[in-house]
Length: 327
Ligand SMILES: NC(=O)c1ccc[n+]([C@@H]2O[C@H](COP(=O)([O-])OP(=O)(O)OC[C@H]3O[C@@H](n4cnc5c(N)ncnc54)[C@H](OP(=O)(O)O)[C@@H]3O)[C@@H](O)[C@H]2O)c1
Image (cartoon, rainbow, N blue to C red; front, side):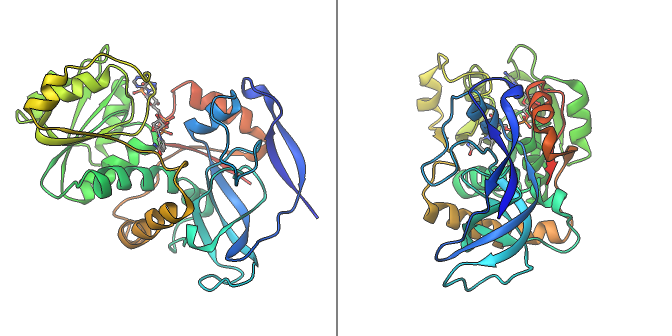
């Protein structure tokens, strides 16, 4: 038996993505095989395609895709939580751009009723990354001021809604005024246009004390500005490096304000840690999705065989929310 998948044929631009046939994978102990109905694009997929971010050892080396939604179609030995036909979504180490995938049953959660597969595929990376960084690691609590950068990004659109649902005042940045405006409908309390990576004064105009927690999706020069608009004992959680991995910082601000600056990634975590993040997501975020308190924001849905166009759209920075591939 074979399945259709999108493979990276060699390092390069979107044109190196090609539709291929691969053997249907078989689930091992504790694993299930999912008939993938939708997946979504992530920046890591673009880096992997360019040869800059190899897949972890237990994932297909040349099939990108870090999140899936679909139906359980086969069970490995010892599977206890899921049955054939369950609608599930979750994070995978790679291999999501394919009709079928095997993954550990505990790395998946059941899709709440009312969410389509395409909506569900837009959830895991955005919502687990944002919730894990802001709440589990950043200790964000109701009533605090949250600063979210790149509010029109997949992760940013999830973070704004989660912050609002938790009862926080959410300040956001974007380089595009239109994205700030659209984010207001998601619960953004105040938008600051990040002009030339300058935003600290704008943030303090909305909360003179500064943010308690910063979701840092951009990196580079943004981090130095973060130090200027984070309040004493605040936390800056570094999640993305869109503006680069190096910049000079005023370390005295970290000392004086007794700040905590932390970094995080999901993909490189061992299975046990991914399962823990999944269980926290299932307990704290899935009920919010089920009640409609938060919802995935979809920029566009494209068929699997247009993965190259989907990569080009993400690289253009034109989108608002997640780019989904229907499979
Ligand atoms: N650590 C993890 O586990 C993890 C997981 C998921 C994602 N991430 C990271 O989180 C970040 C967001 O990911 P995503 O998939 O949500 O992104 P996305 O949907 O592709 O959106 C990114 C947005 O960021 C803005 N942007 C791009 N380059 C920028 C720059 N140089 N300076 C300032 N803004 C810039 C653009 O909007 P405007 O310019 O219009 O504002 C763009 O639309 C990425 O860095 C990604 O790698 C990390």
